Picture 1 (cartoon, rainbow, N blue to C red):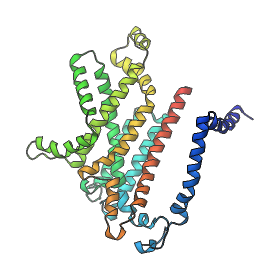
Picture 2 (tube, helix red, strand yellow; picture 1 turned 45 degrees about the horizontal axis):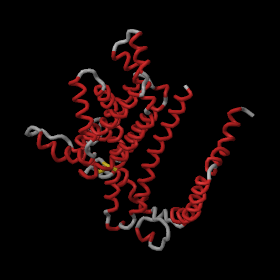
Picture 3 (spheres, helix red, strand yellow; picture 1 turned 90 degrees about the vertical axis):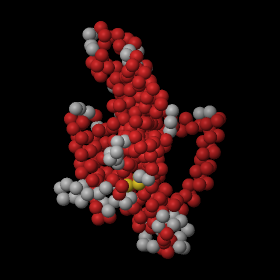
Picture 4 (cartoon, one colour; picture 1 turned 60 degrees about the vertical axis):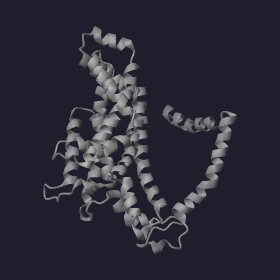
Length: 353
């Protein structure tokens, strides 16, 4: 028996010991087990055993005591793709696959090289072609018809992708020795962090067009994307600044003794260590961005939440909101849980290194 197998075999014992190692932990464990025993059987009964999965009309669920998953079967296209033309919905589906694929590719360390930026540009260009169309024989689809899961993934992925480098630059600027640069960064960060995202979305949707020149109009979706990028960048900046402050002074002095310039010292010595120290908080921000994309519903953008509401607005299918929100809740959970698990594995790899 290898040492690794012994270590794996000891995990359940350690986990059990943690649950009962103190009287308080033992009491909490007993209470939680009791709650699970009281609620889990009923939940399984409602979700699966007494649920209805077939049929094509609400009448199929009239005598069903459990969940009516027939609603999801009939309305999943509206929930996932919103108002996108029915016959063209293979395009947003493929766009989702491309976005998720490039994110998964970026999570593999062997692809962490400059060519990854080219892959990202190619993936985003392909997503744009698929969603907009107008080329390669694809019919043009306006952004007002975009919705559902593809829109949520686009807002979150592009938002994080653009906000991260901006946030790093703001964090470096806030620690700059140049008073003008430092003041601009401080004002921006504190101003943006002092208002909720929903306020920025309202300003981008309502106030921004008032200040644009006559005849210039920025798409509503683009305005929402800009607001998300600006908002997230401010939070990333403060998180990165905390990581920079955690770097020992000796690292800076060692880089200076080697004769490295500011950008060499920052890019190769300081910033990599700072980012390693803040993987957890950064992932928390990324997960928040994914969930906060649902706020664009207030300006009429059909994200996953708004598309679900549109599906529930059908007079023939009213009364199935529980099933609908459980469905999109499961989608959000799978995405957020996957991000969280990856961050934990990344932290373990770096600790071992």
